[in-house]
Structure formats: C-alpha cells, structure tokens
Amino acid sequence: MKNDRSTVSRMNDMTGNETRDIILDVTEKLIYKSGIAATGMELLVKTAGVSRKSIYRYFANKDELVIAALQRRDERWMQWLRNEVERSETTGGRLLALFSVLRTWFDSADFRGCAFINTSGETGDPRAPVRLLAKAHKQKLFEYVLKLCKAHGTPDPERQAAHLLILIDGAITVALVMGDSTAADNAQCMAQTLLGL
Image (tube, rainbow, N blue to C red):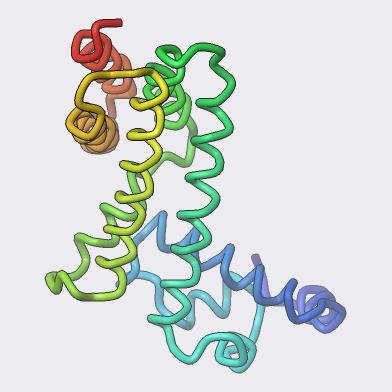
C-alpha cells in the first residue's frame, strides 16, 4: 500500500480501533511472509500507511506489536480450524478432518507454514515472549485435538492427541519445506491407522 494523500486522508477518518486493526493486520502479514527480523518499523509504517507515532500510540515497542499480532493470529487460526473440522458429522470424521483442513490450507497461495514454529525459530531463548506464545498456541491445538479424541472415545486420549499433534506439525513442516501439500494426505493415512478408523 502506498502512503499517498488519499491514504493519509483515509487514515485521518478512521477510528482508533480501525487504525490499530490495520497495524495488526499488516504486522501479521509481514511477519508471516518474511519473519520478525525482516519486518522493521519503516516497512510497517510504509505498508500500513500510518505514522510511526500512530504505531507507538497503541504499542510500546515492536516486541509488544509482534506479540499482539501473533495473539490475533492464534485466535483466528484456531477458530478457523474448529469451524472447518466441526463441519464433519461424526467424531471419527472430525479427527480425520484435521488433515483435510490442513490440505486446503497447504494448497492456498499464501501458505508459509506455521507462524508459531517460524517465529519460534527466530529466538534461542525458551522464555522469550514469542516462544511462550508459540507454546501456548500448540497447547491450545493439543487441547482441541484431545477434546476430539475424547469425544470419539479413543483409548488413552492424551497419548493419541500427542501423536496427532506430531502428525499435524510434521505435515505442516513437510508441506512448507518440501512444497508438498500431499503431506496432509499422508498424515491423514497415518492418523487413520493410528486411530483404527
């Protein structure tokens, strides 16, 4: 987005929440595309069409902005996954739908892997806020898969959910690194065997 007069005048007409949402949306997209380190404040200002002052009105620093953008992604991604999976009518179908949904995501033009795995790789400190947020995201995903396993009545649901989480993250990683969206199909076959479906 070019920062021209029309952008500036449009920005002046926006409410605070709209401006904050634009900043968060742009931050999320840039981080997902290129990573945290490559997403500098100048690029954010230019792409969002807002002033640096506007960014700092809502966020104390870049770290706070990054965490807020990733928290939004976590909420949206988990809601998207739940909505898609819940379309399946049976409990077994929902467990397998985890992978059908991934396949759709892998085939999308903007697929760049898991934002939380990607950003975790940018820091070596396991206590860094980005790593803690990634861990919380994976815990939510595990808990959702666990809920599906319990609803299906799988024996040892915690263990099965842990296995499925590894298949999910493995499929995401293979799809990104190898450029192979069939990783979701392969993971689904493995899940079928694992769950006896």
